[in-house]
Image (tube, rainbow, N blue to C red; front, side):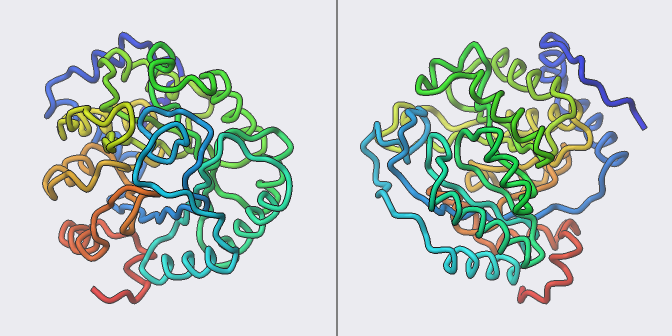
Length: 323
């Protein structure tokens, strides 16, 4: 197998991103076959606490700073979340992700409920993932003890472009949260978003930060902006699907063992574009009608596509779901 590197330079990554597309995809697929198989993991994402977030992320309709159609909702009860997790499992998902629209986790009843949800999801035999903003070392340890599989905290963009997108927390804050997660023994899930108005250099720098973490993140979500009315980025043009393919392929080359997750923006991709992303090394999708508050492809369509190309995860095939 090829050596796994943690010393990638931004210049090297830019060169990868600008390779002829077929050459780039071939290189990524070759590495992908060395470290993984053809199966695509299905993950379901539920918004446990929706809207009213204190952050001012320019892409996010859940921010309290913007007027969008997203309505603030209270935290869902534990029983309702676990019922959703059971439904996700019945439909074939093997990973259940839970999101709280918070700037940071605070100790107290809500965090205790989060721990209970994590334990419940794990007891169902699912991987449990949480995304809830910044967390401290003690909170990371408590989540680890509850059985959390992974914590998601995306870098979003490059360090240089970051202040153009978010000013309510720093890039250093994000990296510190990832360090707390790593030190607790919980898997790191961290990626970014393209289509924010960034340059290819920004994309390369974001990937460089991820690819120089030791070890690499176990999961790397690649998101395309879903422009939402009322947010500062509402008028951004759609991402070229080939750009998404290039990002998936480059992430696969840089971090061969990671789950590269084809995430937000997938509803705008044709079946053929999605398959090209899978060929480039993406090996996980979010499965369900929503990604927090934005649309996601229909579950039946996803299953039909993955069955057609022979890429359904074994657990999904054995779940007995109706087609």
